[in-house]
Image (cartoon, rainbow over the protein chains, first blue to last red):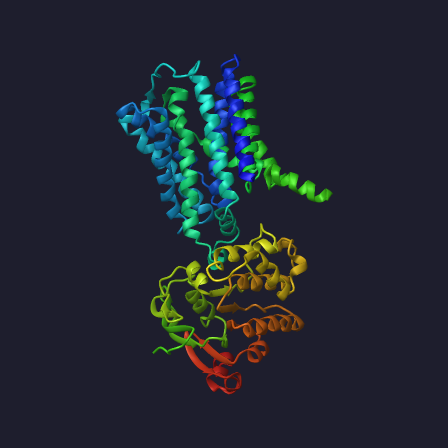
Amino acid sequence: MKIRGALVVAVAVIGLGVLLGGLRVNPYIYFAGYVVLQYVVIATAWNVLGGYAGYVNFGTPAFFALGAYTSIALLEAFRAPLPVLILCGGLVAGLLGLGIGYLTLRLKGVFFSIATFALSVVLQTLIINWDYVGGAKGYTLIRPPVPFFRSWAVLLFILMVVLAVVTVLVARTIERSWIGRGLAALRDNEEAAECMGVPTLRLKLFATTISGFFLGVAGAPFPYYVTYVEPSSTFDLNYAVNALAMPMIGGTTTWLGPVIGAVLLGTAQQIATVTISSELNLLIVGVVLVLFVVLAPEGLTGLVRKLRRGRA
Amino acid sequence: MTTAGALLDIDGVTKRFGGFLALDRVSIQVRPGERLGLIGPNGSGKTTLINCVSGALPTDGGRILFEGRDITQLPAHQRTRLGIVRSFQIPKPFVSMTVLENLGIPLEYAAPARSGDAAVGALDILRMIGLESKAHLRPAGLTQIEMRKLELARAMAARPKLLISDEAMAGLSSAEVDDILTILFRLNEQGITIIMIEHIMRAVMRFSERVVVLDAGNRIAEGTPAEIVRNAAVEKAYLGE
């Protein structure tokens, strides 16, 4: 029953996306919408590991870029179609996720975060020196004529609507299952969770793999979006900061938190980019994040919960 | 040397931390339904031994058998599922969950293999332990004694055959100690074997049928509480020459 309700909402959101795609508005709306939705995917994927399991991943750019560069490699080699790129980008990044899952055996807390950050730097260095995917000078994608839709902007926008909906559905399903409850237990206290029968290693590997998969999925269509991919913007620190800030602002313990955070912060950044300056993005994130950490450490969803409890 | 029919058979277990020998070929057998006290001065290896039995630490030698099965290589969560459950010296509740949800984790992850209805189970356990009225509170709203009770209740929810209680009473008042003792006696009556690690001698001596004494990683004595109190080696370990 509850699952059916969620599916109805999911289909409605996708329908709304298609409807928006049909409107003849300024194409910039679709480009901006793509970025916001991409952040819904990223924040939700990050939160499966960072929020549910409590392992803070600073290496988001590594996973995102791995998705993007897997696409480039497959485009170069086979001219692979977009759905294949998304699936493969996710799988490759998921494998990397499985790898960092084993890191959790030895690294906890801030040391895990540092290791994932280092991973991002290492991977960027590798990509810079790999000429097949463009290396340091970048890769230019010449987009074929757009299938089915009016423009690539509309197609990519609707694609991202679908990806965001799927990611959120998966995260919500995990959160409400025995896996989600086990992850919450190990987030609260890993040793106690293990002693209460929770297979902590297996759950952590699951979380890192799923998280990595969807971060890769977010990055896979990126070459089509920008058409010119180069390492420094693909491994941008922005992804690491936003992936962490958005769930923090929305609230990390439920699926809704990252969605709210991504929509609010993502939209604010897009508006600021157009109206004020593109450099202001990180400043906004920084200020908002500090405010939330101090005033509402459980995010917006936590704040609402607290207010409701206070009134009851 | 192993004894047939032992529930838990710790057979020559050794544990080193670098150059420090924390456990030196320690052997202890625990019979089904027994109340065993494990005592020893600070740093004697009690908690290390418990960590080896529960699977939190790998051993460097020896074997551990549970119901005749070698569990030396099993990860901790699988030992819990077999029925070896421990409580922690410093309570480690799941802070983001209510008391009831805390019990839900072992009920979901450890117990289903053996027991029937899970949802009813949690409230029954809370009722028995006396935490029923706090079922919907978060652990942050509990007092010290309630926290200890939660620790025991959560261990109970894993449906243990062997419960290892690691200093469940440290820092409690004497009335509160009696409170916890009553609970442990009742669990034992239900057929649960209990190993009690404790510094409060009055409690250990009253509770245990048999007491094992560790000192500097060695088993130095074993016997009934009355025998242990008279044992010269134990006196030396605690008080010096």
